[in-house]
Length: 282
Image (cartoon, rainbow, N blue to C red):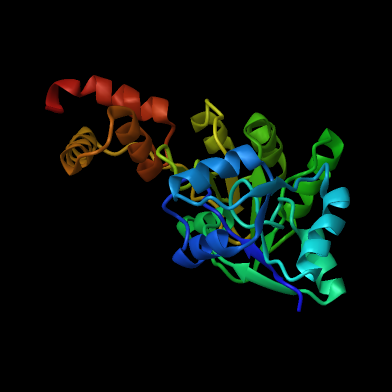
């Protein structure tokens, strides 16, 4: 009797985001096929798991797949993991799953943390229908066409973007998406998790430092941003600042960002107003 291929979702940042079932499976399988064995070793060490690992990534998947199939055929069970999230979702794993299906070998998905779903539910946009597009194309012309196609979609759209290309995406999105609302999730589940909401133009101004992993959610076509409002009176700004300060846990920079989101105004305008009334903030 052949073994089972377990497709195991791993944390996308916070090491606590892994299920008890996933930990049990990782302990019980004969071997773990990992996108990066060094990265996976940190997770296994954290949870006291000593199961051996072998590398399984986009550069060796063709050669490694027959080896893993042979072990499965002998009755060994195997877990496949990526560096973060679920294998096969913009990460290696789909080829091995398909090979197991073709060979009549059981495939068992072990669900877990998902940047896609986390960003989607945090966006507040409709979750159905929704389209997941993976990563945008790398070449400039292909990217422009790709973003232009999004402008014609009526449903919520989710995709991943690399930190060194998020600025280029926002520049192109200004042209093609206009005032369509976006939510950008950065470093989801990690210490510096952040969700930025606004139009492409607004987010390009706020996202000056592009670090971390980005998940972008585009609102349905009918959901567009309201015209930017004027900053409220000094009294309202002071009251809101005090409320956020008293809630605790926020730095001054984070408070400015939150007020900018509330007022739908650039952070620099909010900061300037706070400087003007700083004598009344304490």
